[in-house]
Amino acid sequence: MNLRAAMVVGLCACHGSSSNPPPVDAPAVPIDAPTGDGQVTISADVSGTVSEQTTGDPIGGAQICAEGSDVCTTSASDGTYDFDVSLPEGMSLLDQVTTATGYLGRETLLDEDPGSNNDYQVFWQNFGGLYATAAATTLLATQAGFTYPSPTTGFVRVFVSGASDDMVAATATISPSGGSGPVYTNASGDPDPAVTDTSTGGDFYFGNLPPGTYALTIQAAGMTCTSFDGGSTINGEWPPAGGETLRIHVSPGAMTTGVGVECQ
Image 1 (cartoon, rainbow, N blue to C red):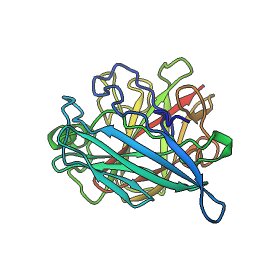
Image 2 (image 1 turned 180 degrees about the vertical axis):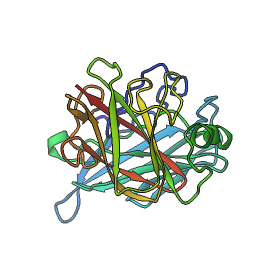
Image 3 (image 1 turned 135 degrees about the vertical axis):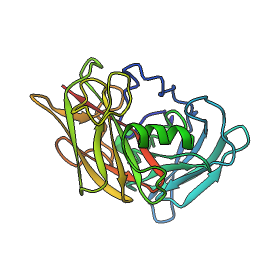
Image 4 (image 1 turned 45 degrees about the vertical axis):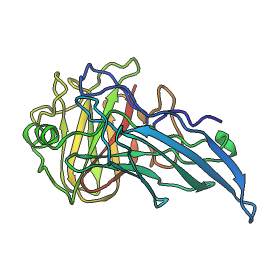
């Protein structure tokens, strides 16, 4: 049973953005075993590499936590890490938060609905790396207009595509309201407050959100928008909350990423 590199809500690595390097995490292997009370516990050996977003250089001393399981580890000098996560069957709302001094943290959501319906698999992926403070300031403050650095609030980045990876004119709302955004990207892939939908850049951001769980709704006229993994809809605990709405989590000092939506 492979722990395949898959996002909780899939990611479209398209639109020619140079800030999106390929995934660097290695797959891990989950093992299911019954506990004393007959409940199945899922144990996953999670390994990967923490790198700098722009250069791809490894980051040592980063903290990687499986939020919801109270398990954390620290990356070695070459950026690598390896740790075990044990989950009871049906556990929900687990996510990974990676942080390092001098960098914007990153949060990725897990499809952690391990059970007989999906062969007791847990899905986890790191996409890209961590933005150094200077790069994050350019992206989130100079371009998007958010307040950064902001250690008490978080950010969200979402990728939107059409059925053939083309860009569509989708718009987004978030609930509960708070923070700033959405800010959509321009044809260069940069956040641009003057852009009004995803038709030119394919991405959008929310910023300065208090930590917590949010409902994110993406709509495009005449289309149905759904979360996806590759081209397949996932039925994990994070997505969907119903219809065109996804549930996401935001952590302070981090950007929730790896969230993808397809509208067709």
